[in-house]
Length: 98
Image 1 (cartoon, rainbow, N blue to C red):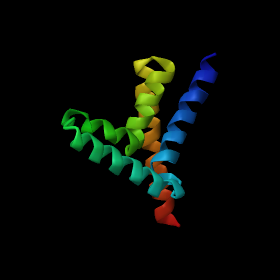
Image 2: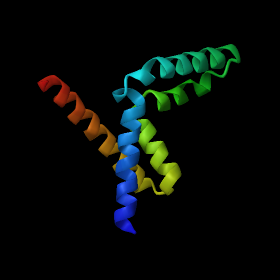
Image 3: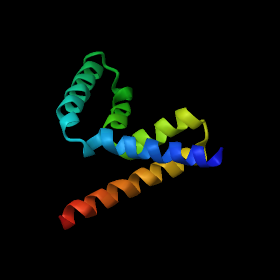
């Protein structure tokens, strides 16, 4: 049971990195969604909701909230966010080497 939960956490961390920048064909689509959401929130004067947009642009935020919703465990969500940060760092260093 615990091994399955850890595999799920690792999967969420990798998927959040995938969505927020590693897979470049999604960049233009994600940028359009974020721009449209920001313009809509400004138009309806919901300035308090603008920080929520970072969920779609930050791998660690997406991993944290995705894991928190999926597991409903704060500690596992923090671990998932840290794993996402580590994955982002490893990918960055790998791209610098190549």
